[in-house]
Image (cartoon, rainbow, N blue to C red; front, top):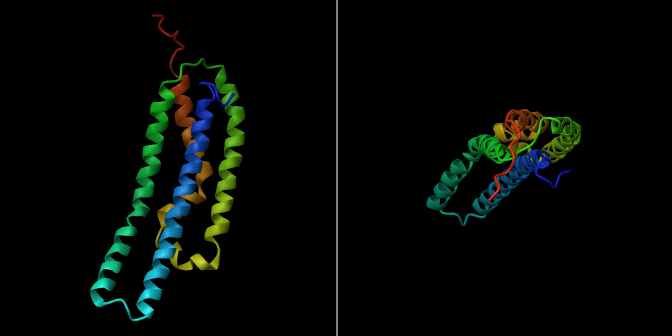
Length: 167
């Protein structure tokens, strides 16, 4: 069911949650490593004042990824709408999608749990205050999955099923 055209909605929803989870983890890990790098390099005394200014400016620019994550979540919803709009299916498959939605919700909740366990470690105390939007999105992936299910279902099942043109 997940490999045919009618099941691609569920695959898109799971991919949406996995992409947000992965990007959130990568952003937080990279920022943590960057902070440690700058701190340790500055502690050695080998970082000149100009280098420290550049490092601080890069750190400030890196904090924009908090807003970029929100834009990415919105863009992924738009991509979901565009990709699901191409599915030609009848409304009876909505029942199957609701069944698979439970699996997608559990998978998204599992991603939530993993993210909370990773970011909850005391190592990431410095990072938590820097990326509130990323943390909000990644700890509420089950709601974003539900939002994508609702939007995808409305787009996929609100139009009439059409036959493919014969050439």
